Amino acid sequence: MTSKPPSFGSVGGSVKFRSGALFAGNIAVTVIYGIGALLGFTMAGSYADLMIWASWRLVCAALAIAALVKKYCEK
Image (cartoon, helix red, strand yellow):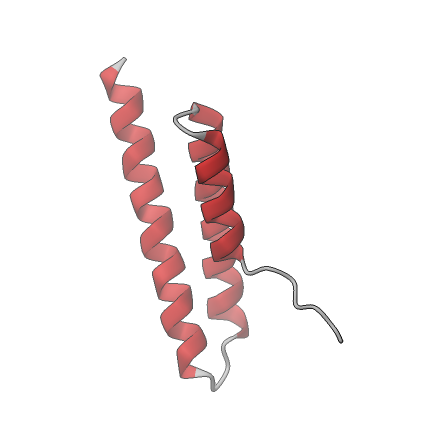
């Protein structure tokens, strides 16, 4: 039996959950979701579902950036 590597979505969610409200955690999540979106868009080819998941990763990266900016502006 072979095991699949975790997707960038599950890794990003795990990092965010474990880092809590840390500033570096938001940066890491943004980078992970951004890489996931980039890889999804570049490797999608004829797979429409991969384009949907890459779009979702891009939305998650944008929300992580918004949370980062909000946290930075509060201080």
